[in-house]
Image (cartoon, rainbow, N blue to C red; front, side):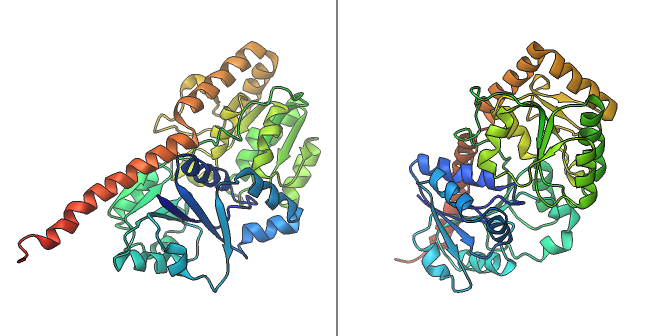
Length: 376
């Protein structure tokens, strides 16, 4: 099967937390024997900022990690007929331009034979509803939503006739334990500031506990305002700036614990959707303590991570994990086993293929009815 994937960015993960999962899916589809072609805009903001931040070399590192995935950058001259030629499955990620989404949907509506899916991995459906409502998804066969609550939004608002819950997961070929590395930090946190969507939470559940416990800690991410950088510096936390996603496993390996701090819109309006850091950290076998978050879909077991309700509990939980190495190892091992059993990109790729089969099975009877009663 030829799979054509339109992503805002594949080569860059700068302020693009979806890159890890999207890359992993492309890898797994290729390993399952499918021809995978990825299109990304040459001037996409993630790619442009990555080059400005670290240069072209880091993008070349990514291409070497995915040798079996064809990645093509495009500009305004993109020949869509050529890009979609012989495609069997087309996935369009929600960060693509509205006109591109509409153009691809129109081809499917006009009879193109491929299965066409829209992939949503953001909270804009509830925080920027008017923006999402303007997208023309009429030609799409369905929506891939990265949480059940988001799937329900699409159906309730009539944006899609078919929507499927398709959670993110870990690319375990990259995200894996690296026990040969020394643990030089007590705690590591990887994440972008988040446009003030978790300012209070990052202070209460990350910066203040680290400062109070006097931990050796490191934070990585982009778009940190000066006030945040000042608070990090005051807490004597090392700030590493942008950490390309494929280097995150080493950062996890060099720390004893990490924390999960979801953005406010997910906690309040889209419960049940974790950040991808949960899957990443568990795959790397590092214990996690989470700020308040409701696992409404039971993605994780109670033994696979610790959950706290306030900053004081976060301090206590971190203190226990750092003091009781046996308990910390048990939490890390439970998370690692859980990801291996349920939450890898291979699991999600197989689920995707099942979804495609469902859509095709439902499409076939409808197509046959066109010819019922026809005179030979």
